[in-house]
Length: 200
Image (cartoon, one colour):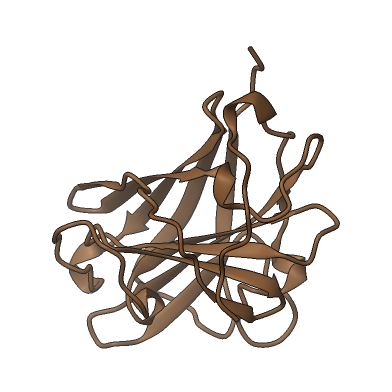
């Protein structure tokens, strides 16, 4: 059984979208022997000043990035294809597949990201699990590369954009430079045969 070392990373706020109410956002990334990636997002700040979507039934929904949500983009090293996953504190989620930069659409798989949300006065945590079988062109030895991001909406409607790495210019989570965390190749025995199912 393969052993994976967890990663603990800190997101940076984009300089063009500062937030006075968020003290910081961190992410723990754990690969599992079941062929998945388990993510835990930690947000510290004045939650009373932040607009947090109310908890509802887990379901797929679009435009989650217009409000507070956590995101993960996953590609394979050397490949142009990638997937985008959005996780809202409401329990809603979205998944998209791209053939290359911003060229794609919703993933057709029936995903179950298993979102768990925990909140306190000044902190918010969100767990989500992603199956690597959603990745296009997954093959033995391939190294997943992650762009980890978040959007935070303040009560007044202002949005701040957070990422492990920001490219130059305006916030752009899709930019190739944003894929800054490289993981070990997954245990292929635990991952089913994937296929790209995004719509053009």
